[in-house]
Image (cartoon, rainbow, N blue to C red; front, side, top):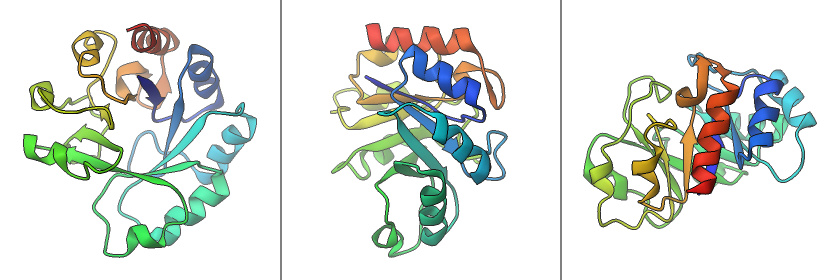
Length: 196
């Protein structure tokens, strides 16, 4: 499984995540989030990152031109769309994107099943609250194009791994406090995912 460490706010956390084996880093461009990062700060971090690391920008309640501008200015490689946008939004995007399903029912996890998508637990704050989707919803489902997010940590990974998700997306589960990662938690989490 691939691992995305989301809510990166500083270079130290980014570099340790990569050192431990993260495949992707998430940058939250949503000002109401405690993990919000400015365009300038994100670009400073991205400029120092080694190659072959996916850089994912998370966006909430904005228009396509904003996503295009921020992705260009920060050199994001993927846009994570964490809301239901207006018609034509995706047609106007100039960057590869992934949709987020904020699931509050089993039926929702099948949305956009023709492509890769992130399934996160529904919370009013658009994630980062440590709430997890009911795993039984994935019983007898093909999870090979799903990235699971929400409420993940090294304590509950064992029950997640059996579903063979494409990847996992973690934020609060590897934090010392909101906006700052805990090195040991990141290390343990990534090692558990990579080693099964």
